Amino acid sequence: MRAKKLKRNRRILDACAETFGLADPLPVLIDSSFARMALRHKVNMSDQLHRLLDGRNLALCTTRCVIKECQLLGPVMAGTLKVLSCLELHPCHHKRPTTAVRCLTKALRPVATEPTVDEASGVSASDPNWRPLLASNSERLRSLAHELTGMPCLLLEHGQPLLTGLPADTRRLLAERRLRGLRAEADEAAAVAAAATVDASVLKRRQRGANPLSCLKKKRKRQTEQQQQKSDEVHRNIDNNVDLSSTICRRRKRGRRAGWSRRPWHVRQFIVEQLQQQFLV
Image (cartoon, rainbow, N blue to C red; front, side, top):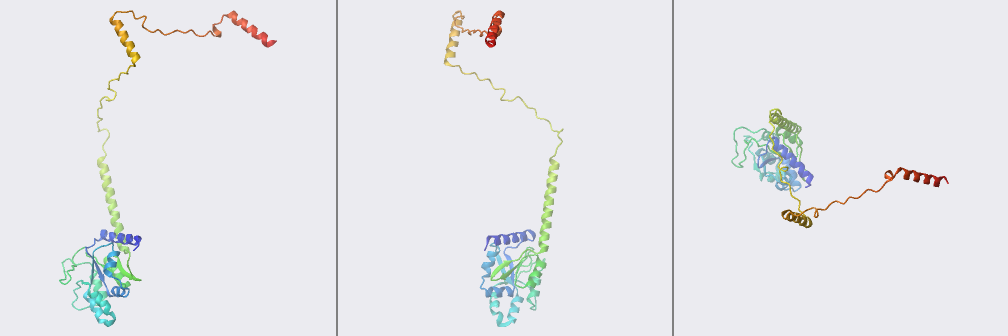
């Protein structure tokens, strides 16, 4: 089975579980048309439906009225009758057998409040999460199941089981429920934000001390060996009362080069006259 198909089926079942809640095991009501198609195409209903419904636990069941209708149809439905006889019996509580359509329609209606358990099969119809899936190839029955339960249905097409989509009413109900949830979350977030807002003037500014990095002691620079020797020599001379004028290194004064402005006036006048004579000649 393709991964895309499995994701679609998982999404449909998760939506049903979110909207109605699904029983465990999930009940599947099978009618004679579905059983006959499974027999014709040699489909193992238990394995195929288990794989189709994302590995969920299934309880394949039918009703006594469906089996009685197959018995009345004679040897044509002998194989279908044998297949249905292997399934669990869902309690239909009909004193007289009725048609399969009427019996399944009643079985698909909302469950009663009082517990009713069939002694033979142990299937309970009082669980509020008991919303069965209808497995039928009858379009009429599937449309009735969509109206009564709001659940998808199962059918066999070309030997492959298929899960129909959610009915329109269920999709609308699911959208409304999600919208209410989003509104509730938005209201809760707005209430939390309103409670968290505090006037800035009420808040007191925390007193801060001095920056601990600015209070660090200054690191002394390491002296080179030559500077260390000079400082030691100066300290020794101070201790011995020696004149330090000879030991102190004086900065050498260098005179500036004599420029044009420092030349005497008559020298500058002579240079100008010499240059004029050279260029005029």
